Amino acid sequence: MTPQQIARFCLELPGAREDIKWGSNRVFSVAGNKMFAILDFLDSGNGGLAFKVGPELFLGYVDRPGIRPAPYLARAFWIAMQRPYPMGDAELREALTRSHQLVVARLPKRQRLGLVLETP
Image 1 (tube, rainbow, N blue to C red):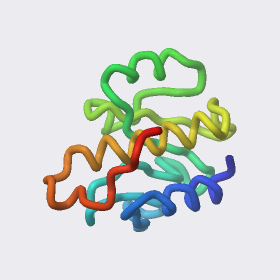
Image 2 (cartoon, one colour; image 1 turned 90 degrees about the horizontal axis):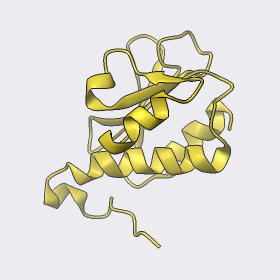
Image 3 (spheres, rainbow, N blue to C red; image 1 turned 90 degrees about the vertical axis):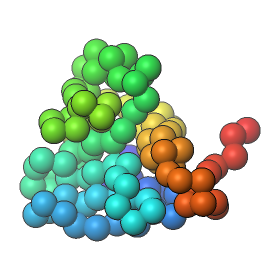
């Protein structure tokens, strides 16, 4: 996926919005300010990507070549990667959706309405 495709995909997730923070980082969040992905992470527009993963998956991801703990966010189980992304398109979409849903799951019940995706 290209950075543009990632941005488009993130914005298709329920309740997602995009902001520019910390200079040139494209931050995707839900419920106002709850981040689930950051594009152009810690670099100047080169497509670096960071997102939240579950604690049970964190070590498995960071053991893979090209994936590392996200600086400043690793304690919250975020991973980071540079282009070319070391995940295929389908795996990346699934990981971004999971990141979104991890953040949604921590919202108060009244804020979760309409944001929870149905699992097949």
